[in-house]
Length: 104
Image 1: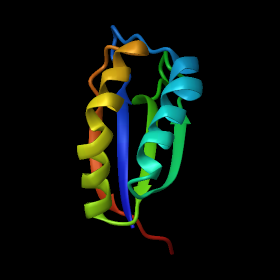
Image 2: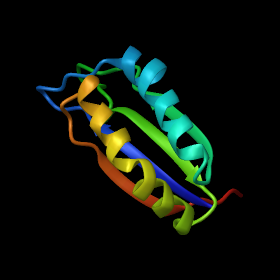
Image 3: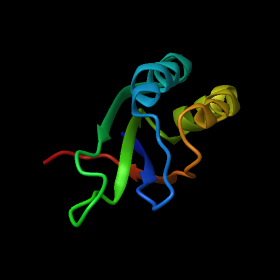
């Protein structure tokens, strides 16, 4: 299984519409990518965004695909449309990590 983490750093000048991210953007991602092999979509939203214990990331989305070919097909078919929606909830450039997913 391939897991793509899309992480939004908690920067000083960060603007992030958590409601739009959760209720509009992520359903758009799910709908767009399911036809191309998206198996699962999970997300984290930081509890502490300021102060001494602030989270390193405001939000993280985890997209699971059956393999790299499925991920690449999703990006080719729908990536531009999905990426164009990001401006509707943040100006933060996300950090992306692609990993092999495993359980123990």
